[in-house]
Amino acid sequence: MAQPKAKLKTQPTKRPTKPIPTDPRNPPSEWLITSSILNTLWGDFFGRLVPLLWAGAPMPLTFDGYLGAIPEHEGKEEDINIEAYHGLCRDYVLLYIDLFEKNIEDGKALKKRLKEMDGAFGDKAGFGTRSVLPIKFRLPDDYFMQGGGIEVTDRFIKRLEMLRSYLENGPELTGPTKGGKSGPRAMPIRFFRDDDVFDFILSDDGLDLFLPSSPFSKPGKPRGRLAEVYRAYMYRETGRRPVHLPLPGAGFPRERPAIQLDTPGGPANIHLDKPGVFKWLMEQGFQVGHGDADQETKKTIQGWLDRVLATGIDGGVFSTCLRPNRRWQMEGSVYRAVMAEFPRIVANIWLEETIEGKSDIRAGYTSNKQGGLRDILEGRLELGLPPAEAMMCCGRTRSVTWDWENGDGVTPSRVRKCSTDVLISDKGFLFPDPGEPPTEDYLLRCWVDGTAGNPVFTDCIPPGD
Image (cartoon, rainbow, N blue to C red; front, side, top):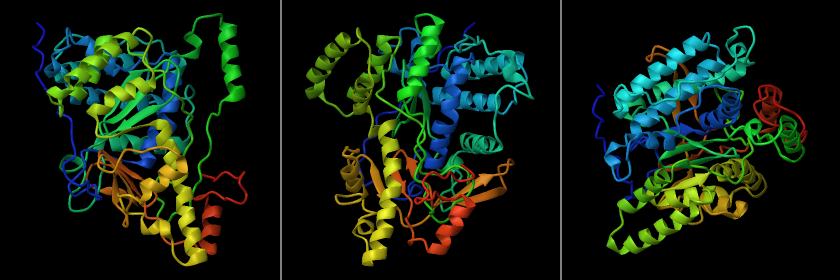
């Protein structure tokens, strides 16, 4: 007999009532991630995960798929267990990490793992013994070969282990309020189905990842599909190397710069299978913090949405409809633009201090108000960022220490001062202290060691990259 569904209500929309603190530990953020881990998740992991799914790996249960599995879920928000779904997405990422690391021996072991995930998720989400996850897959046997299959490097494995540690242990911060249970947790992740484009949406609710459909599953003859892929190579960029600054304090994993831009994105073409699911997502923004005066607005938007659903949901519609339920959000293309511009702002500070003895940019660097780092980014990128009352976007004057556990959860095996990382949390962005302008000797050492890019000899590639 199926167990009764758990009645867990969704959390109300979070509205800022006090100035946003600039220390992620006091009071602690709800979740926290560093730019190097987010870049590993997106640029290293996700870019290889999607073609693995195209090759036949088990597809994740998307968020709209989860909502669609709840019978007659519309109007029954108490049935939606968001935390259970976030835990499932984390388990999916860990499953694929094990596939890359060849910790799953064969298809039989993979199916057993999926059934265990299905059972655990059913208990947490209130599905009981009813199977919810898609268990079938068509991954060829050679992907499980210990001596072949997926090719990985030691550097890639190190970055995957960094991601695994983060997902399993959370952000292990040191200080008055440490990470784990008493501090910020790992960033929530959700999967959605997408038709064509690699991109993500980052918000105070976490990370929305979209799964593009395979170019080899589109209509037409096989040769025609291959021709489209070859044509894409002719005009698309498959990755641009970042400006790799010689910021002091770089640590594990040295091989991947914290500030980077290495995966293309574009205008999203998001597709949700069930219109009712999208309505549910949109309507959450009108159920919290809005009075009767907004009922006419709600009615108008719902009528507009009914018409739009017939032609498909693009990224603008998706993000616009979710915005009322989020304190802040930004598309991945905006995030990557910010990450690409930030090193140039740091170099500008160094240049001004070297030539003029002081920097006007540094003077407002730690301010979350007008004239601060947000305004500088907006002016240079010619785009708008979430306002100061919704999201902090400023520099910090001191480093935050991050403990990497050695496996027993007690003894730190590596300690990294995140002086080269942007700290990203539900409260927003904290950028690292630019430090003093590096000396000639320090620059030469960084170029030799491969811990910084050489802006003069621009075709060089740092050894660890």
